[in-house]
Length: 299
Ligand SMILES: Nc1ncnc2c1ncn2[C@@H]1O[C@H](COP(=O)(O)OP(=O)(O)OP(=O)(O)O)[C@@H](O)[C@H]1O
Image 1 (cartoon, helix red, strand yellow):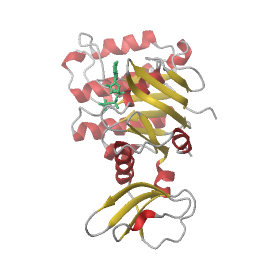
Image 2 (cartoon, helix red, strand yellow; image 1 turned 180 degrees about the vertical axis):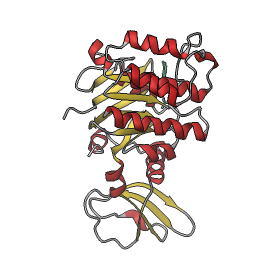
Image 3 (tube, protein in one colour; image 1 turned 90 degrees about the vertical axis):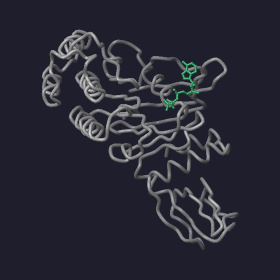
């Protein structure tokens, strides 16, 4: 099956600033992908490349088997909601839907109307008067009523209170299921990612640090604990991601894709949050994963 997104040596430079470096990805269809990383990591840059809003300076990217925004038909297959969930302040909710219908050949008017009623929006209300949560819901409705094959969201729930965020993510999941679509969403909120995503990309220092299904990643990562300084020689096939030394002992987060060989330390499984933080810490400390390993991380 054609991957939803495929990138090879993808890079983007703004002047002298390298926003994305040597990115290799191969994301299968039908996933809800969480893109996480610190401020300035390159998340929006990657999403904008995927939508064809900006062009790469290095490498290649294809979305649903074609160059992003290749033509009108391809544009119709991708729904994008930018970071600030943009709407036209002077237009009413109903006018937004009418505009969506005019601009999109596969517009699903009943779906849009049903959703607006479900979330309790008044069709006559001007979008400029909507709350942040209502604006996000309107933007989600418009993106979904295109009936895209891929929904891309840049921090969709960042401005929402916990209740509105919960409702928004529920709706997003319903849409993805109803449309049989794939979704990629960037977020700083690991709890949200854990709730809705089954595929994870950690981006830090402009590089993909790790990527894969949440299930595979959790199965391949462990915490070893032992007395201080224990971890100088790990068995073959076991890669140290992050080491933490305290006065009482040491802990190391490791990746082992095959069966774990017998080791003399305490071995525990880790949660997604610890995994993400380990890769971010490693990137911050300057030990950047070489390109060959970054692509290997897609397994
Ligand atoms: N149009 C631009 N011109 C110049 N530099 C840019 C531009 N857009 C992004 N950058 C820089 O590229 C880097 C990556 O930015 P990007 O917005 O992709 O990060 P991000 O991970 O989405 O950050 P955040 O979580 O804060 O939204 C940053 O250093 C940013 O300053």
